[in-house]
Image (cartoon, rainbow, N blue to C red; front, side, top):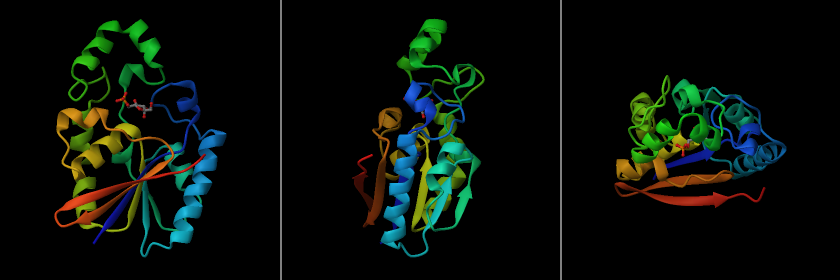
Amino acid sequence: RKTLYFSRHGESEYNLLGRIGGDTSLSARGKHYASLLANYFNSAKVDYLRVWTSEKKRTKQTAEGIQAPIENLIPLNELDAGICEGMSYEEMQDKFPQEFAWRDQDKLRYRYPWGESYLDIMSRLEPVLLELEREDSVLVISHQAVLRCIIGYFLNSDPEKLPYLNVPLHTVIKLTTKGYDFEVEYIKFNV
Ligand code: F6P
């Protein structure tokens, strides 16, 4: 049996403001989640646990208290929203109504100008997915869109549904092998 763990970073300053992307720090609530997450893993004593985060402050801060080797991986960075980085969805709809409508029509393939699509994330994630196939006891701390792609991959989700998978904040998603499939468990923290 092998187990992989996944979590979004704790709530960030931008999450609070409803803005996408950026490189902000955790909010007070996000920091609280980071400490609960560290308690959870430090007392679970998972053998040979390793933690992989993105290169962003918010995922590094979320991993901070966990007693395990930590690596920061660029391919785990959040979807690059190009010209829309730092905007709220309302602002986007207001400034770029056509882009907003296109994204809504085909969220999987839509690429932000100067940014990325979900399909782009899938291709940059390929080396990470291959590694995860071979690894056990890794906790991946990343971001909403990237985690939708990774978890969707392991659960064999229909690619069209990937951009809509539910990956809530302040929740550890635990995947455990069962035969050739994975069982999924959501561990929600009260933050
Ligand atoms: O809002 C948080 C966030 O991680 C953004 O940084 C990112 O652009 C977005 O989620 C991805 O979600 P969606 O594809 O639903 O816009």
